Length: 463
Ligand code: FAD
Ligand code: SF4
Image (cartoon, rainbow, N blue to C red; front, side, top):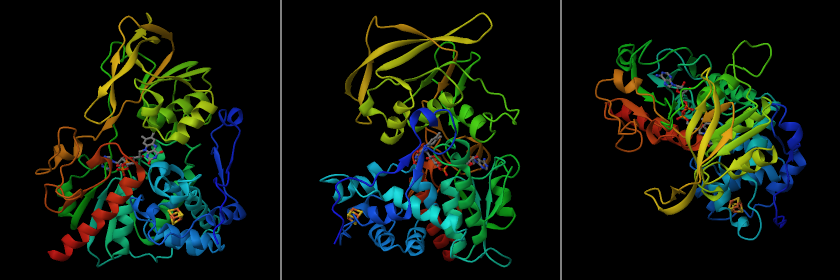
């Protein structure tokens, strides 16, 4: 008999006025008792809607049933059979629009806290310091596949290929593996030890990772084939920042969110013992309304800013960021200026940003994306005094690999053209994640990596 408690079992969090001064994880996770109690809310539906909402089809009722019985290792193995990075997806997936958004318990009350329980199982196993069940499988004599990029797409493709018996090498441009998980998403949302642990698990399974390898510079895709790789998967993401093209955007103190977050997360600019420079602004404007904007704003606050404004041209309901991130940002003292658009950055005589001019917006007719387009309200301009501006209005794929790989086509947004989501215009080259879709989500990238692994396997077997 399921536990009919209407709401999710609450999860402990650091208090807002304490956490906005430190970088520790905001959400503390469930205890074993809380996890069992929450999992027992699952009705074990015969035709589970939650699974349909999960891009990697985690067997949700099966794993929840094991958690409810206290069989956490079994639960972990069930999750791990379709999800290569559960500690990560449990923390950063937009569950409200995926599995939990479809859970029938959400009709009268709150859905089962599937994400929190996924996280619990992964953390439980990490504490037990157990490796994934699969033994190391890379080795001599196996067919070689190259994976470019070590974000969620590349890692999950690599994990699946190793399980299928291939020798997999991941080539990563940066000095650390993990993609956005290490350089973009901040420590207080996704501790880096969690990402490192997931990567160690993949390495223990046999995935070989080579860092500081910019494909297109150090080696080309053609050279990878010459080295004996039978197929190449490209999961190079969408890390090229977009700007607004307004006056003053080149001033000192104006960052792309990617640069700002990379300095903080990957280069540890917030820690005294690191020499990485970063501007610790007192009054910071963050432009944008997605997860990236929330992360930049909350990071600026933790660096000591008195005022952090999020400037977004649509309303709160239209914000693409996860609801939980918006809620946490508000609690931490971030000030939101909705229906507001920057038109100019004011610059002082030394070239530093000193103000941002904005115009108020109203929502007009829906645009191609179905969202109502913002229209400037005449005469509503105002200036806001700031010393730092962080632009988080989107990113695009870097063109380097396309430019150095004959036969590999991209569309007008710079995303790889594929016939089925993964198969590119160049034989033997597959792609997935943000490099194909444009900036999206961790779980979609993981799903694309898994799909690509299947297609690579079929391609190699058909040769
Ligand atoms: P990436 O994670 O971008 O990884 C690509 C990797 O390829 C990088 O490591 C890059 O260095 C490497 N690379 C690029 N070019 C080359 C080359 N030429 N040679 C070798 N390596 C190369 N999604 C969510 O679901 N939830 C969230 O809460 C969330 N928050 C986010 C916060 C921020 C700040 C950002 C930036 C994104 C966020 N996202 C979130 C989006 C999510 O992180 C991405 O959709 C996801 O990481 C895409 O995965 P990927 O593997 O395609 O690419
Ligand atoms: Fe359990 Fe909700 Fe999935 Fe039904 S839809 S199986 S109640 S998690």
